[in-house]
Amino acid sequence: MEKDKIVAQDNTLEITGSNGTPSELEFGEFGELGKLNTLGEVTHQGDEDSEYHEDYGEEPTEEELRTLTRVSGKIPFRCWLIAIVELSERFAYYGLSAPFQNYMQNSKTDNPAGVLDLKSQGATGLAYFFQFWCYITPVFGGWLADTYWGKYNTICCGTGIYVAGILILFVTSLPSIDSVHTALGGFITAIILIGIGTGMIKANLSVLIADQFPKRKPRVITKKGKRVIEDPSITIQNVFMFFYLMINIGSLSVMATTELESHKGFWAAYLLPFCFFWVAVAVLALGKNNYVRPPVGERTISKSFRIVGVLIRNRFCYDAAKPSLNPEKNYPWSDKFVEEIRRALSACKVFAFYPIYWVCYGQMTSTFVTVGGTMELHGLPNDFLQAIDSMALIVFIPICEYLIYPFIRRFTPFRPITKIFWGFMWGSASMIYAAVLQHFIYSAGPWYNEPLAHDTPNHVHVAWQVPAYVFIAFSEIFASITGLEYAYSKAPASMKSFIMSIFLLTTAFGSALGCALSPVTEDPKYVWMYTGLAVACFIAGLVFWACFSHLNAKEEEMNAMDYEENNGKQLVGDNEGDLESEPVEQIHEADGIVSKDYQAMQTVDDELSPYMSPKSM
Image (cartoon, rainbow, N blue to C red; front, side, top):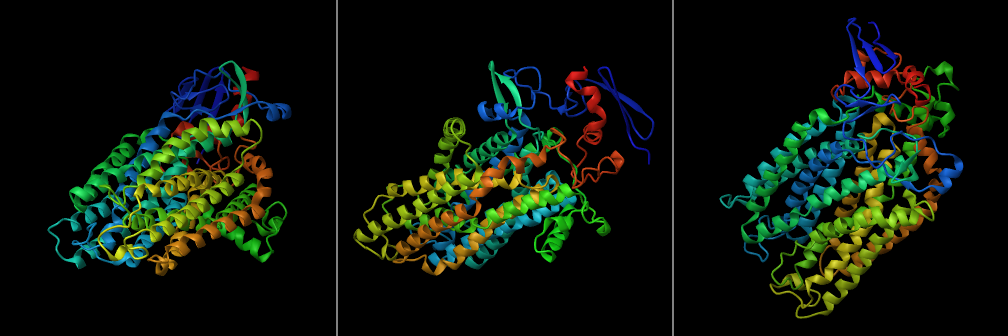
């Protein structure tokens, strides 16, 4: 099959396909994606920022890297579309799960009312199973996307499964369903389907939104008359801050669903997320042709496992896996891919500490709700305070993004490992506060350390729980958001969904640890449980810092792999030569065709550069 021919002359790019049919595109128009700039890059319409100088910048010198302010690139409109999908999915997820504790724990005659009557231990254990399931299924979703279907198609399939799960939950929660066994069977079926849908969406949506940006080197630009460095690592950081902000706007659904639960019933609380989730379905369908969807890499996950096997056999000597040093082995990957796997494995080691953090985080949706039910609610549902976490994040994420982080960067780089360490410290602080508060609850009458055994609460206002939720919110900004950013930035280009799923898997392990703690999630053991979690999270943070603080110094070097030698064109597949050695039509595109023109640009970047560089124009 004849390879597509690309010829650049003057201001025209001529593409001649294997069928011999030529097409010409002038600068300013370039297929579905929008515009062709003078660097030979395809840009989306509307991406240009009027605040920026008309050129596309130059590579900074060593002195400029030390002295110039670093800023983020612009977030394009298509990222907002993807963010709306995430907002809708999280609206459904948190709106559904907020009433779960009462639904599972209590009977219809209890106050607050429930359905399944599983008591505190049973409800907490099943809640942790749901979290575990929702965060183990992303491994399947990430593998499916990176190997066969691509991110967009996997997200769409997961959306359909998710909708089916919510529908079953709604139907089996109707007041006309009198059988507890029927309700329990429907509930378990629903959370299994919702977990599968969550996994297929969660492993891919955050990666898809970050994929909308070209992987450029840092460059000096003029913004508002001032020379600054547009830093891709800060852009990715801000993308995930923005993404997490959308998550928490969606999670405010707990305010609505808990009120519906209290005044109308569980069926109404589950009907609202079912209706709202169709917003995600609509946005996915309407925005289909606007998203950048890189082709699926060929067998990259299986190759990565083969490399790990070689490393294990050779005591993790990376040179043993490099084709250039072992030509007789005929390895089907490049030296660069081996280095990318080295970087990804370093990230996975960082993730190993997260399960302890997630156990602390999980208290917010389980034991905090139970403890809230033993306090004076003054008309509020006991599960309403989960919204405090979301509101704190909505307030403090922009403050961190636009004030705190830029202020710190004026004096010293604020690297991911440092942020994660502080996330652990804030998680520990939340557990310390919860332990102290629990001590005061047990010290207050009339029921002291047996508040769940009676219908009336101890005399402690539920508002005293607010700081515990706020501390958890601070910890999420530093630990959770940075973890998403780290998983994306340290993964090979063709394995980003899979590596993201490995990070999400740590939440499943945290839920498993939480299940192991179920026997102590009862009165009067809460004080010791919270104290133990506080100590564990604090020690984990210190050990984490001791093990990985040296990675801060290597941060820019590791990030440079993504834009080394191609200045903005993210390589598809695990081998730099793969795309140049195959016809454009033969590229594996299970994720759908981005654009014929876009594929051609990725393939012939080096061929075009002599014509397109600003110096030759």
